[in-house]
Length: 89
Picture (cartoon, helix red, strand yellow):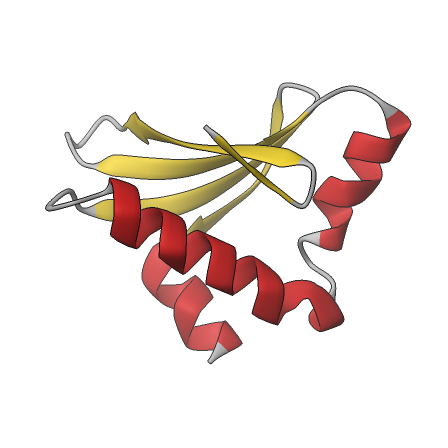
């Protein structure tokens, strides 16, 4: 896992046999605030760069279907990967 805006990024297999990218944030107030920064318009460029670099370096032939934002153990958002990159471009 690597840090992205004080969270951790990892790939996990989903029910379809493909992969989802997890962005995990802990229980502290600071980490929860950083989870919500994921949606901040002025952070989208940085975040999308981290995500695309991580996928390019680690997915290698695996299909990444969704990006899941997890804060304090709860999935707060699940975004189809294609929709995410379409929105930030």
